[in-house]
View (cartoon, rainbow, N blue to C red):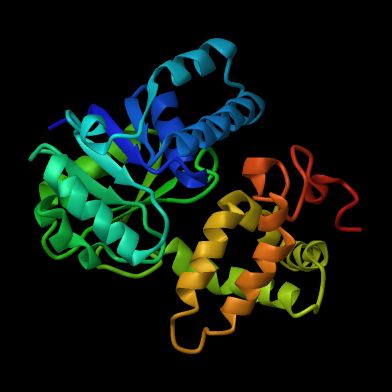
Length: 298
């Protein structure tokens, strides 16, 4: 079955990027949110991606117009998924919220619909039973920003049908992603397993008053010749998503201290509507962040 009709559930920082990239690649899709206010916020994010695709990918006004024409918005899940071939779940990183979502989705989606989770911290087998179709359920994980970090990690669970897995691999290719195929379930997949300790260490240095974000980024960029440091990466991920991830990770043994890191992130940035790239202000200001200046490493 070729995937043609796509629904992205959750139009947050990453969900809206996934949807935009798919629409930019020619797919017609629906972003489904829980209420009209969330839809309005998603539309504002999409307008941000218009600007970025024009600036960074040289997208023409006609290309941006066509991309937006392919995106629809909905608040009623049943209506949104009534003819969906693929649903990409990109809702908040809270196990209870995801379980409730899949229990509802299972009741209203067509039997043929493939369900995928973009969860950064959970593995698909944690929700497979709730989907009512474990053979058609797996993880399809993106990283931000989707338009440049074009890896799509694809991770099944023990009951995923291999043919369904390959359909999702092909979809990832069709929207310009490079599929990263995992042979077994792994919390954090490949990319987050490698980068999460790095980002948590940077945030902890900042939260403990050891050094300022720009100083930490400079140290990393000078030492490794990397094009950006951890706080630039955090801005791209989206600081709401980072905050939720910190709270989820704090429940793990030995990581209770991340609660205080999350609290500082909320007080210092989120409460000031500094959300990262999405709001043009996070640890850095955009569109011309300090780390891109020629004198940043001097």
